[in-house]
Image 1 (tube, rainbow, N blue to C red):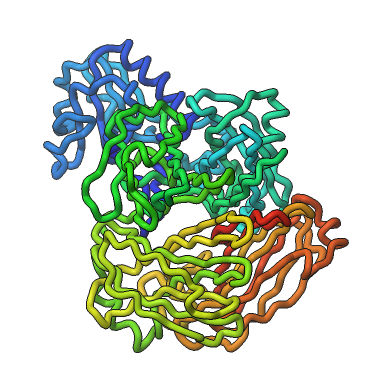
Image 2 (cartoon, rainbow, N blue to C red; image 1 turned 90 degrees about the vertical axis):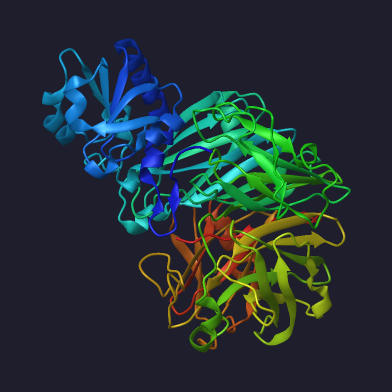
Length: 627
């Protein structure tokens, strides 16, 4: 496993990780490493404890012979692979070069330079900075907004295309001019193209289509990853997006995925084993300049604790399509697969092929160090049903709606859960206690048994048979078109919704502290061939406003509002939103292909799923994102 710290649930992403992992910074580290190798034996002064991550992510760095710290309590700790010595020993060093493992290191250099033995060369991580022209805040290098980055699975091959869509949400946080710096890697990790794309001001939409990129740069077919860096960002240090994968010229595939998590994790979960007539491929996309060594990535049946290693190396920034049956032969749906990724990849995608159609979905981060929370069983007096995982029940005449609860924390051994079912008007029409499920369960529930034509369901904790809870309740949601056989799936986790009382960081807010009691969701538009839709849910852990006061705001590609329509959703109810029905074709034509709908509500927190649907039985679905 890589010796890096990437994400903390309380503090968010580790900006230092992003500073080391950025592809342009990685090239600068290569140049720094070459200079240090030429200088001779290397010593490292590690004032902030970052050298381990630097050397883990960049194996080109020369091996350190000595390491130094100025904190007495850190003497003897392993830094850069060797025991740390007191900085006062530096004058007696036998090394020829000293690396000060810090950015903005001027003060550190000033107070330690006099301690260097004669002839020793000094270098700092300021040599590995991004150019100032790529920084949103050049005055403070490790400001989060300097690393508003993400990766996207990007493909244009065999009749399949991808299209990334988002909006300039940074403008709402005071950003001025924003532009995107983009680098496209092919499957082998080679750079296919690099360019900058200006972002129009205001809430303008952003669209990057693989077919257009391929034509612009005269590229061959590719299946790799796109690195995205928003320069001039404010407010958010993650590039949020929706990514469509669609087919042309007889290719009937259609799917959508939410943005990737921008930080690599130890483990991921929420990937289904294949049915007998399916092939499931895990897309392993190396997020770093260091190769993934053989055996570093493993697959396991969830709960089996018998991981099978991948014997193949994955090169820097390379993408590998791994058929899960190669490592776990005979494993069948509804069994689940855990990916032990060793912090080498951001949240990966998987692709299911069945009867000539493919669908792509994402895995979720499996939390480490998250023990059961003894306070959750006693929440009901103040927070009603507490944590909820809401998901739609699509129209029963056309679709099957299936839920598979998924363990999503390494210490999670039991899932004590119930399912509550509601019609669109918010009336509860059924419930079923699913039991205190073990980690290796294979219970997939078809919601047709509840005899509701359309609505939504909530997974909730239920402790009647004991069990533990940690607030990180997840499920894989699968939807199948009864006529075409096309399927789509999504996975997400539970939150507390629409209560005046708070617990820890719930109900979450888009910005600021809890409680989060407002909505700002992004819905891209489709076109005549593929209609855009959203399944909106008004989940409530306890009684809240009887009705939402939702507004649907139609924007054109430049971010200008050209129409708005009110929408009322009953508490614990839901609604299907079709922009072409709400606004009409004329207004959608005016909005254009880059137009979008912003779903706003200042009175309650809605949750939603979105996608596209065509007339041939193809459709896509994943959870929406907000800002």
